[in-house]
Image (cartoon, rainbow, N blue to C red; front, side, top):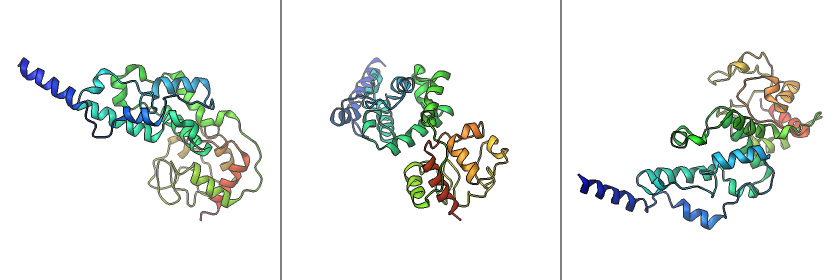
Length: 253
């Protein structure tokens, strides 16, 4: 029994030095120095949460526990880290475009609010990674463009709106297919929460809103202020960008 256990432990340690998904430790050494969110764009409270609760899978500053060298569990850990960095890497935040940052900030806010991150399997092992109510509030602010929103807007340009949609919105929406958000062809003039086959929040289905220039401007300015309890965590701070997006949606017949 003891010999078999020792043999099993030795095999686990030996196999832990193989990397079927590539060695993420090697990638960190080659691709970056592990410094996080260097440009200071992220508010201090949200930055502290991201570094403390998210950096293990979403940066080069991964803290590797001892069991991360024991196969086959080590392979799953390495796979999760590789996938996490591919989705969002806090070590390379300064290399992203502003549009890419806005999309990621909206995703962070949404996933924090709905308890989707950190994932359950990670929280089961790392109890200190659970987000407190204060953590969630700090991360949710990232979806509000820092609270700085311009009024007005004027006449929008549909071509600019299409380009903005492709840069900012396609992570959750498509024109002709449902994703995390409903498809947007025909959204202008439609009653909110009425598209068959899409699972809307109860709040939006009961809102009675019809999507027109005025309601879309309010929605894109601050979805929560317009319909509390909805599922959208992304807003558009600049009035001219809201006008462009509305012009684009208006012509999607």
